[in-house]
Length: 458
Image 1 (cartoon, rainbow, N blue to C red):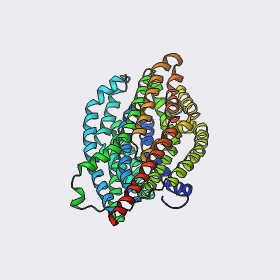
Image 2 (cartoon, rainbow, N blue to C red; image 1 turned 90 degrees about the vertical axis):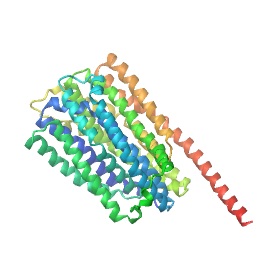
Image 3 (cartoon, rainbow, N blue to C red; image 1 turned 120 degrees about the horizontal axis):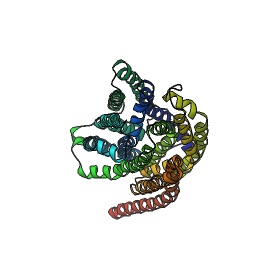
Image 4 (cartoon, rainbow, N blue to C red; image 1 turned 120 degrees about the vertical axis):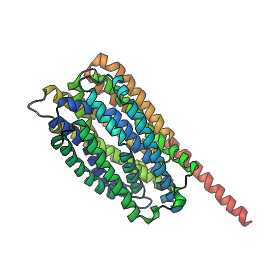
């Protein structure tokens, strides 16, 4: 990422990521499709009612490990392989500790949280069973995301895609097996997802060991470095918490949706699945600019960093045109993948289509969030992603708690776009401030190094 055309590099880097992330969304989609088709609309609503909580823990894992990989990316860009290995080793340790703590905590809080958001009684037991299973298996997505982020940090976005494709096919087979052959219901689809993620994590790990000798660890690297662990958490936790803070907003919206009954919960669940498939391109752009920014920061090339952000912004505008068109043309046929047209109430499909097409008008602001928030994280900023996430949470919470009473279902639908606008508009200015401050600090540090070298020679 430190040499050559920024557009070409990010495009080539993004294509495997886009395919891989679409398949990652497919994990969740298959769960919902299988449940909706073979178990029923109430089971579909049960899985959908947990979407905010699933997003909270899975997003936490993704944000944390993406943050951990920032130091690896920076050390790789600076060709400091010894400290890169140490950061990798401590990332493995910190990921293990985090997965145990978060799994236990959220498993214990599962039912109280579902009751807090007023999950309908006809789906709450299935919802609890599904989400507890996901919580217990959290170590699988944490390590898959860690190893994938490490590979992307050194510019390899193709290998994680291959492993994810294998895992996705396995997930489909296991979903069908644990629902149709062995009728485990919602537990079956959650269990299938965990097994698939464990396999993808193991494939990534053994590939790293074999393909990249620079990551082969010794006992020396595995010795606990508390200072480095604090540094990793200082970068990783804000990224993890930004997803969790956003998830709290999603949960608040889910609470508002639950008040409309199980059919609307099912419609919203399908709508958000389609939304995630359409908007995954923004996630990919964020990953690309984060890796690009991290490597060029390690190389001290600030002119190239600024150019990369400009290119990423233009790519985001193009992506927005595509996502809006997709929202209008694929939502209805995709909705019928999840439910049986002949047995499902028409309002489920109508509410789903209305949701996706309405929010698509605001996708530009969502794109701003991913480009500048994730890009600033790649530059090593923890504060900017957190400020943006808190802004997004406050806006979404206010909208979700006030608008449904005045506007009904439309009030719930518009809550997320309001949050995107509130957070997205401030981020470009935060980036400009931070990149200027970081460059001044870098120049000053380089000047001090030169002066120290001159003094030594004198």
